[in-house]
Length: 193
Image 1 (cartoon, rainbow, N blue to C red):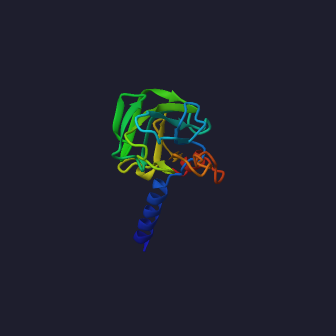
Image 2 (cartoon, one colour):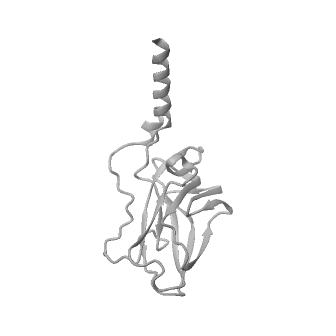
Image 3 (cartoon, rainbow, N blue to C red):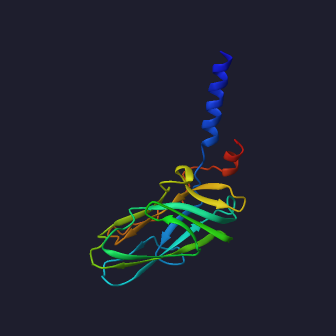
């Protein structure tokens, strides 16, 4: 009986130890400008480059600076245009369609850290169509099922991801990030460990 209880407690401890709280006040997003003011862009003209900006927003109460990030972009565009990635580091593993890891030799200070730009060059006016959405989500390989910002203590902090809309027709294409759903703190979760 005692052995069974020990096994149950060990399994519970393992389950609790692997759980991570996702931050609602820190996130990674795609923006149409370097001021992080818009999460949508018009890309309906062939042969005109549209640049989008990737930023990590870090709540100073959670993350002071980041040494790396890990995520993917759901619904990354395929054939029909040219895509040029310009990350703010040479330490790049993977790609946005499956699992992208960016590491920084000098930590990027918060609250808003510039990760890089991506240039989209449509070869057709209808390459992506209307209301085409890309979203920052957990990568396929790493991150333990989370979008990750690694802080200067090398702790992996699970964060939220934003949505980016191409050719928005609804007039209400918001980022979908940055709004807390409940009050919580990463410190209270770390205390469980």
